Image (tube, rainbow, N blue to C red; front, side, top):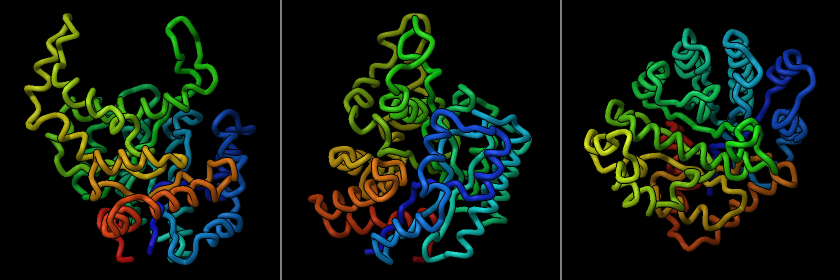
Amino acid sequence: MKKIDVFNHIWPKPFHDALIALVGETTDITRRSEAVPMMTNLDRRFEVMDMFGDDYCQILSLASPPFEKYANPAKSLDLAQIASDSTAELCVKYPDRFPGFIGTAVLNNPDAMVEEARRNIEDLGACGMQIFTNVNGKPLDLPEFAPFFEYMASTGKAVWMHPARGANFPDYQTEDRSEYEIWWTFGWPYETSAAMARMVFSGLFDRLPDLKVITHHAGGMIPFFEGRVGPGWDQMGARTTDSDLGAVLKALKRPHLEYFKDFYADTASFGSVKAIEHAIDFFGEDHVLFASDAPFDPEAGPMYIRETIRILDTMDISDETRRKVYHGNAARLLGLSI
């Protein structure tokens, strides 16, 4: 069965070279990305992909962190263009392995964010654009980012949303930094969930009903906390006295839980059966897409691909659901003919 891996990560050589020229020595999660051979070594990527046969292919995207972590708006645009141009070249050169790519939005550059998205989609043929869950700590529902979402909704192309959070987000107010990489283990699912909530309750999907957003890591916390998200948030405002939050729910055109179910989610869950089961149960079989998050596993590439395939192949779902998750939903959403 065809398998389209819609959320895995790469640093094409021209981008990697430009990044190193800018930052010099990598640190923290940037060093983590650079240390994995499959990120920058195309031969190693092909070796790993070949382990899963000719039916396995990848939709390419850059890895964390977002550009604004290490670049100003102008340099972010330079890096984004180098990344998109070089990734598009890989798709042209190896169409069977890489039937598409995701451009990376430059939301920290308001003068260029729409034009760069347009260039990716209309000129380079990108399947969609990747954003992160905050922009230098700013939430995505601010008016300054609205033109980007308006453009994306007009194209029918999806937005891939990747969590962004570092050790500078402390676990407690009395501390300066997060300890034990809690910022990653629990912080990233929280980031995804918080960004989804801000989109829903700000009315973004009422204004842009055609906007499609794919969430990384099986939808963050949302499927696991359906009760809190649904009937728990039905009581929004009951716990708050200094503002009228009840008006937020009244302003929405539909029950709020329906908007959360309109998101798409991938299967990148680090080998968790329950996470994928919950994602399919919550978002529905038409809104879950196969993804591995390769190559960030203990084996530096093959493990998360192998384990995700094992889970889907042995899960108690119909063959039709399995087909949709592996490739049908991706082909429909991304406009692929494979």
